[in-house]
Amino acid sequence: MSPLLDLSTTYEFDDTDEFAAASQSKLGDGYVYSRWANPTVDALEAAVADLEGAAGSEAFSSGMAAIAGTFLALCEAGDRIVAVRQLYGGTYSLLSEMLPRYGIETTFVDVADHDALAAPLRGAKLLYCETIGNPVVQVADLPAFAAAAQEAAVPLVVDNTFATPILCRPIEHGAAVVLHSATKYIGGHNDLLGGIVCTSDALLEKIRHYTLEFGPTMSPFNAWLGLRGMTTMSLRVERACDNALAVAKALQAHPDIETVYYPGLEDDPSKNLADELLGGRGGGVLGFDVTGGKERAARFQSRLQLVKRAASLGGIRSLIVHAASVTHTQLSESELRAAGISEGFCRLSVGIEDAEDIIDDLEQALKSTD
Ligand code: PLP
Image 1 (cartoon, rainbow, N blue to C red):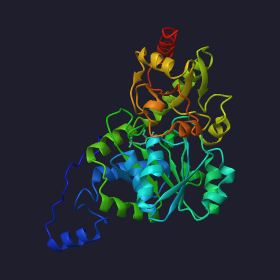
Image 2: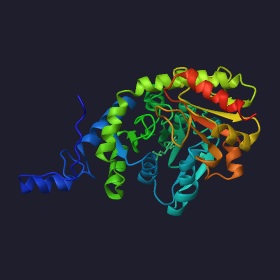
Image 3: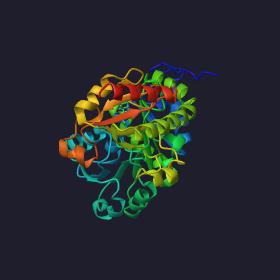
């Protein structure tokens, strides 16, 4: 019933020739050394690849390791990436600050500008976006991005962390690579850190070569937690979507909330794309601006009781962050504005608690900040 947890870092051979042959091929069949391959990590890779409809996948020690590994495996000095600017702050600073040190530059485009991708994609190495962007939850028009990428003969790489394969399988919409922070919905309980990249055999070979040399391997225990988390992922995601929609509607009707960002709301700019790509669901994360800006947002957050002030998302508990001071600190004021993040913007990852309890907590915290 429970998946095998194999903590061995090394495997014994009876025969020296067999040992030598297995060590030579490293990524071939059989287990030699667990930075190269491990049965528990392999089981998680097979499960996530299957859910995403990919030929295979490679697990990493964190979501950032998976993202950095994908860029470094597919690009070299002198190459250029095209990415949307509405991204997780860590990915944005990896692209804008870290990768240029290694000779890899990025051209940023607006997620809504998918019609104007031909020029930036000329001579580029890959196109990158998030299915649902962190933190303002815009849905990317994956078929349009995939068409532009195909026209330019570059792979479309999609971070599917917020949507999960329960809501969207980007490969079906033309993506060549799909990756996740497994720390979020795959794990689901805020107790594992991991990342995973799903793709074709040809691209996987490059990515595996990278992990073998750079070593950002997932630990078997985290893979085991990921496998356990996946058994309830569809239930958790569906409940989080139902809860998030109820919370979004309640906040939209609240006089102290300026704007609610949630692709499941009828009047949200991403609603049509949510219908097309997410089966009409909006995901488990929403954003909102509290009237009164940053100070009022801080007072409101400090009075929450059920909803926890904590980084991360995609777990069973509702977590809230002030994006400009927690998850997107790497962005300057103008970059925050360009990414659509206002001063008082709060990102709420809705958990699987009772929706009414979450709404009551938000309402009492808003009331007591008057
Ligand atoms: N991708 C998205 C969309 C994220 O929100 C995050 C982290 O919040 C990451 C990637 C990075 O994942 P990790 O924290 O597992 O490195």
